Length: 133
Image 1 (cartoon, rainbow, N blue to C red):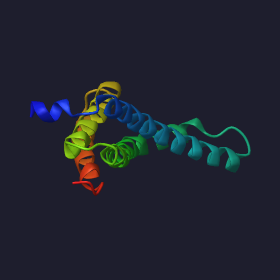
Image 2 (image 1 turned 90 degrees about the vertical axis):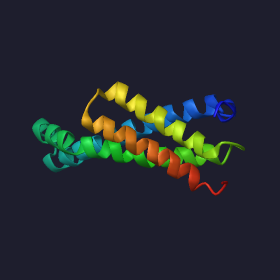
Image 3 (image 1 turned 180 degrees about the vertical axis):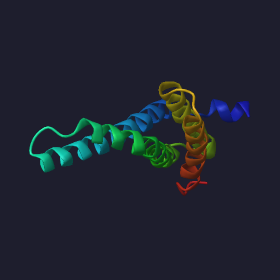
């Protein structure tokens, strides 16, 4: 195991985990902003803030983990295609790091814990689907 850990490209994995988290956050922000824009065009002025807040409270808890899963899967595929050894381990570590960043920045909750577990699975699945192992 220590031999496999020494083969990890840590800079690549850490940067990919940060990019994965940022893309997930930007996705949630873009969807809520898009909804607010649609409301603004419909109202021909300032949109109703209560509707925007209701939308964000209702959909952000689901969009965030889904985006984290998808971007972790894609990030793990990207990293796995560029490494030579311990390919699945790279994906799992990417999932762990992305999930931990999400857990730390979004707070400890059941939703964040489920996101962590899904991110680890997405990292493993993304690395396995890269076609290198």
